[in-house]
Length: 196
Image 1 (tube, rainbow, N blue to C red):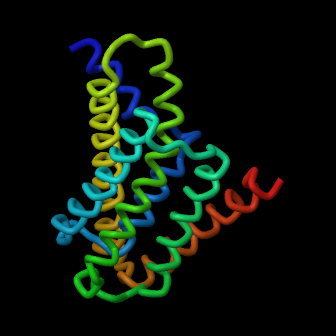
Image 2 (cartoon, rainbow, N blue to C red):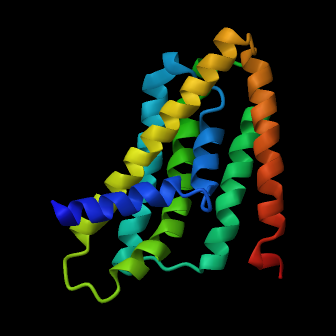
Image 3 (cartoon, one colour):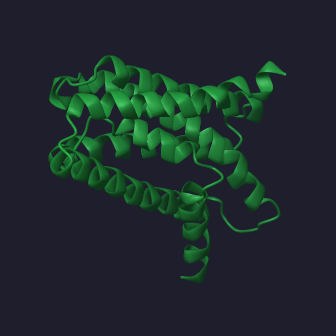
């Protein structure tokens, strides 16, 4: 149980770390058009993201896939930018009108990219460990999933408050939040090591 809590807490803290906010920003971007009414779709998308994320961790930990950290660090904000731009251009449309297949495939792919970013961190904490990598990896992934659910609940609650009590329209919310995310992410992309 002690070992479970160690890796679970690592996953939890890694997502909720204020200095490593890109994962949280991606989740916020993913949730832009959704409210509590859309909980099934939100749960599906977050689960698909986690699936891609965990698959990337497994592929990396077992040496099947290896990718430059510089490349991964560049592609993570690109995934956030694409997600925010998508919601910027579909602002005000009902979340039910979105093609779930398209959004689902993109979400899994983006999960793979984000998972590769975590895999470098996970591989460093596993160095020198004689224990099986599968169990700690799953414990770490569960911590990440728990952190994502905390973020999802917080974002949906904030959205509910703004749209219910402050009468913020769904379209305006999508435009403002997409614009804010783009403003946060563009400097990350431009400061990437890939351009140096």
